[in-house]
Length: 328
Ligand code: UDP
Image (tube, protein in one colour):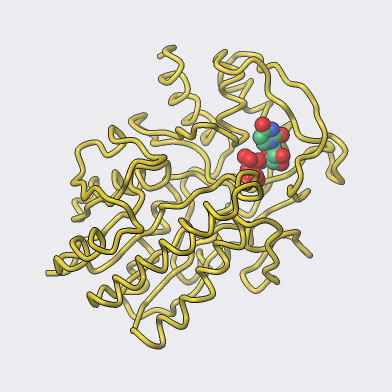
């Protein structure tokens, strides 16, 4: 029976949490990963179909098995700055390999596709909170790769019967509440893990990009959403498609924003340590405020974020950082 879920990129940050989430619910799943950026030990014993997403034979082997009814696709490169310097790398993996994956799904009649998209599809917002029908004008190649995939999904739906959901994550953060998994990007570029590395001592000093933004405290505001809540949304999106629900994009965020200073304060409170900070110029490509209007995820999917308090998100990330730093 084709009721199993193929988690592409299951060795990465959000993918590995999804694999755990499915296992906890005794839902059948397997991982496809080449470990170019993911970690084998993050699978925690889940079944692995190792291989390269760009390799048609690997995809045919996996999807031709008849086991899979859904693909959840987490395997993409995510560094905005790198995408500016190396767009070829981003278009090859995030777009061309995703097309290869969708083509293999069409060849083998695998119908359901949950895509990890991003708030980066919006670019500089005209208004916040940002609804899904806000103009999409990405300001970097990373955001464009996500939008390009979103734009071809309706064509695959019409021609091949694909049912899809594009989940536009705002700032994915936090870690497995049970402490088995967490965020492990190398190099790490995200605020919460870097602030916590400054607390643990793994980073000498956190650089804050800009204190002259048009916000109450002069630092950028973001909508941090817990990785476990993202996993809930993926499963709800699958149930929505199974029930014949509309294929579409959904924003995933808490609808509230926290400034960089507020995140640093939370890191200090949660860890009981002082993170050293230095202020620097604004980072190119940043927007002052990015906050989601996630009404559609709540009303259409029935999504209710469970870990929306910033201190909870930071506490789970701190438990993981202590482990990584050898403090736990
Ligand atoms: N940020 C920062 N210092 C860092 C990393 C990030 O000041 O070392 C800021 C960044 O400018 C943005 C916010 O923290 O305003 C969140 O950045 P992150 O890279 O975590 O996520 P993004 O919003 O870019 O997806």
